[in-house]
Length: 411
Image 1 (spheres, helix red, strand yellow):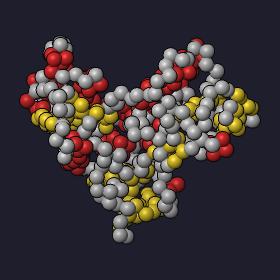
Image 2 (cartoon, rainbow, N blue to C red; image 1 turned 180 degrees about the vertical axis):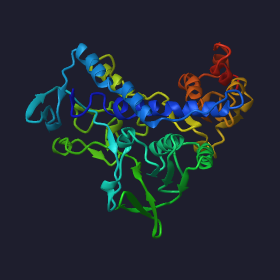
Image 3 (cartoon, rainbow, N blue to C red; image 1 turned 90 degrees about the vertical axis):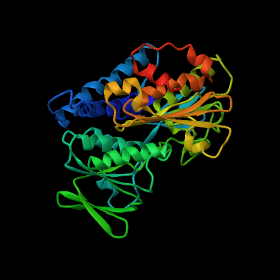
Image 4 (cartoon, rainbow, N blue to C red; image 1 turned 135 degrees about the vertical axis):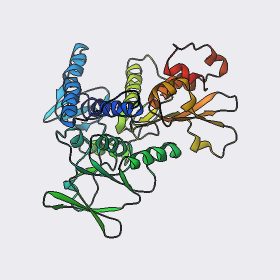
């Protein structure tokens, strides 16, 4: 394995693990807020200690993962790999040959191509802040923007989100997204739709963001959360004939590139499935089985859920209601969850889910907005993946009282 950076890539080092650690105090604050008539006293958010705790969680992961790899007989080479031919990789002047090669270089933060773009920061920079700026401006309204706006706002920053268009989190149920935005607005987060950001400039100790028709705002810190792009440059892909586009490396149903013995896996792949860590793990496990001749079947993706760690959270899996609004072969059931027994225990103020059924009344999709949306969608996931209906669901006996038993009662 050739790695130019920390072993494990984005997820353990500057993505999932770091983000959820920074979010943990937000979840606690929200719970205390909902239980304020029962629990007395105020909680304070210590950002510096939060980042310190983040590093306690993640700093040992590269060595831990390296140990797992070396114990399994994997040779780890630190350096930049570049394809010389279909079977040869140059690593900083040393050539390595292989029968098969897998490109799993992931993605990196996109940077706006505007004057002053070097003055903005990315998601890695945000998670490394030891002191949180008082005023933060975020460009974009995808996962990173919405999650970090939630965290920064809860920690005490004044946050402005400059949206590219008029909708945030466009692949998610828009009525649920609108609720999250409304909640953040009540907490002081400002949203500017169709902002059309044109320039960043330094202004003493602050920065000026130009947008719209000659409008500007002053800020202490800029987060460019305008998306992520595949790492396909400087790999020698063009030289050996591996085809790619702006969305990533093109592969067939065996994750095989345009060069027969070169494969690709993870976020660098051009695909419709969510570019998430579990997707990459599933793909790489498939390649292990393919290379060891356990299978020669094409890759068939399972149902892959997605979640946005805002507060409340939005999660979904399978067919979403917006996609089948005009298709009579599906039926859609929306549930207000606040009457659910366990929701009453945790005193949630807003919780809804939408279940999509096919013509045989099998569950084929679910989406939810709530404080526990991620857990709820996880509990519904097996029904979608294995095509369960009422008979199969009736055989599930969940622990009671529990959140999962409450979710099942609504299916």
